[in-house]
Image 1 (cartoon, rainbow, N blue to C red):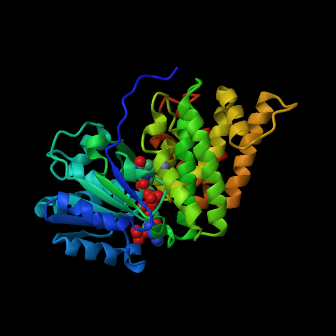
Image 2 (tube, rainbow, N blue to C red; image 1 turned 60 degrees about the vertical axis):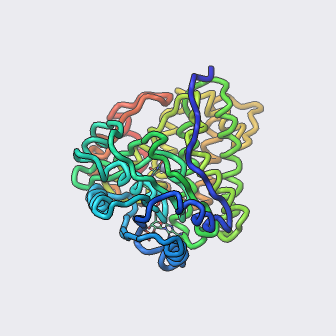
Image 3 (cartoon, rainbow, N blue to C red; image 1 turned 45 degrees about the horizontal axis):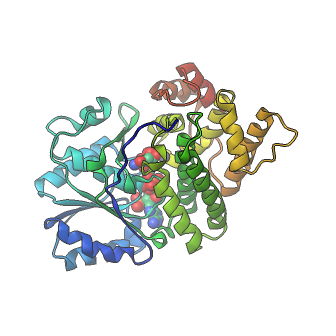
Length: 388
Ligand code: NZQ
Ligand code: ZN
């Protein structure tokens, strides 16, 4: 049965080749002081920085730059951003970059005026926001996380080796997001394909949970088919606009809260992947690809009918003359072939994980209970070993 829910998404999206022009429509809604958050410099190389700066100047904004947002943004960087935002009385945080920059901007937006340590309040204690929130806008340059239209803000504490995501409410979602598929053309292949798998994982985390007949599952099967089709094209021709734009749109829908409505969700692949990320600083999407198949094979028996449905509806496995288990396994085999074809990490050793790290990673994994099997720390260890 579809559960009860409310749904609204406050982020205004501008999509397409001319979408950056709409920054001119958004900027007048905010005060003069804009904090421009960006990463390690890709936007300077590909010219997006110049275009954004020109629009900010044309709109008479005072720009306070906050460069150097690293992939998997750290708590130290968050404290730094809070200082910049507060001391310059910032009215809008404009994140230009990927999920890391967008997540970071949201984290700063709720933390700048937080009277306690935001890491402790939002990440260790998972408390709600009860202070001033600075509005965030996003110009997206990397596709995968869905951060452009959700409340997620993942922060890493390298000292305590914890990578934690807080999913904030609608008041923290970006006010607007600008999605130009061409802005993603300069992504290195590794980042591009990591993003592709991140999208797939977001859908699977929400699909492999619950056993009811559910509209969301049909939507997700459609999204997966579009994703598989378009990513195959994009891997051989990264400048195929049709493929790249479909992927960008799929990524947004995969994690803008819609498909989770009315159903339970799993998220254990992300929990394990995040713990791997905290230990290795590896690229997010690759941490997920390395553990996904061992995880799904581990839990398959507990959700066998859904894995069969996945095989038939997504991978077009013919069930004739096969047992439920055989069909389900064939689906995961086809997923494995696809993953190899697009070139994502297939094991944790590739990401620098060593046998010695496994107990620590298992301990740092948050166990959730929405999936087909509630794992123990021992289960996580076994999955990690099978992922090596
Ligand atoms: O830093 P720069 O120089 O910009 O380079 C970045 C970075 O090295 C580069 N890049 C981005 N756009 C580019 C580009 N290079 C060339 N051309 C472009 N157009 O790509 C690298 C990775 O960027 P990053 O933002 O780290 O990637 P992603 O979008 O995958 O974000 C990962 C972060 O998002 C979190 C992850 O845990 C991780 O911390 N997530 C956020 C979620 C959410 N908000 O809901 C959910 C996700 O599951 C995920 O956990
Ligand atoms: Zn993800």
